[in-house]
Length: 328
Ligand code: GLV
Ligand code: GLV
Image 1 (tube, rainbow, N blue to C red):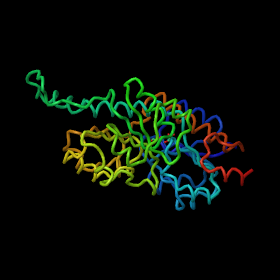
Image 2 (image 1 turned 30 degrees about the vertical axis):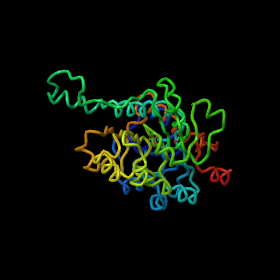
Image 3 (image 1 turned 180 degrees about the vertical axis):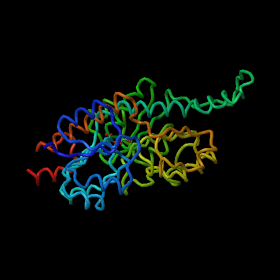
Image 4 (image 1 turned 90 degrees about the horizontal axis):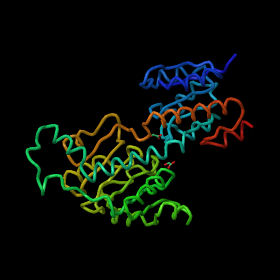
C-alpha cells in the first residue's frame, strides 16, 4: 500500500502525477485554503503533506496528526510553520529555496521601476481619461533609478539577485544583514555592508527582504521611516508584518517618503484600507514568485522533498535537520 499524503491546494497536473506515482494522494483540488479544522481532519491519517503559506501547521494541528512524518511547504518562507512544535512532534519540515530567487528579484525590480516612475498611477490616470495634453512639467515627474542608491535589508540569495540586477542601472548598492557576506559575494553583487541606520538614511530605493519572525516584526516602522529620505521609495516583497503598514500609510500620506511598492501585507489578503486612497503606492497580490515556470519548480521541489522524506532520505531542503538525525 502506498503512503497516504495530503496536497492541501490545487497544484499543476505534472506535480500531482509525480506524487501519485509514489503516494495515495488526498487532493484538495481547489486553489483556496482548507480551514484549520479541515486541515487537521484531513491530516489525521496522513504521513506527509504538501502545504502552502496559507496553511498554519502548529501544535494543535500536529496533535491531531499522529502519523505525520513530513510537511513540505511550497514557499521559501515558512512563517506558517511553528517549527519548534513541528520539531517536537518529530516531523520533518521543508521549504523551496533557490528556485524562486531570480523570479522574486524580477518582481522587486518591477516594483522599484513602477514606484520610482509612477507607472501604475499614471496608467490609472490615463484610463480615467485625465490626460488632456502632453505636459513638460507634468504631474508624473518621478525619481531616477539609474545612479541612485539601492538599499537591501536582508541580504539572502534573493537580495543578492536583486543587487546583481542593479549593475545595469549604474546604481550604488548597500545592504544590511546580521551576518556580512564574504568579500567574494560582496564583489559579485557590488554591494557594501552598512549599519541599518545608514541603510535607512542613504537608500533611494530600499528593498525589504527579511524573513518574518517575532524578531523582524515591524523591522520598518515609524522610527525607521523617519530616517528615510523624503525622496525614497520602500519596496516590500518579503512578508507582511516586516513593515508596519499603518506607519507606512502615515509616511506616504504626509509624503514623509515618496512612494512604496508592496507585494505583501499585514493580514493579507485583507488590506489596510488606508492604502487604497494613496496614489504613491503600487500594490500587488503576493506575486513575488508567480511565473508558471517558477511556481511549477517550487511545487516539484516540494514533491522531491516529500518523496525523499518518506523514503528515509534526507530531503534536499530540510529546515529542522535535528529531526532527521533522530529518525536515522
Ligand atoms: C512566497 O512568499 C515564498 O515564501 O515563497
Ligand atoms: C531568503 O530570503 C532567501 O533569500 O533565500
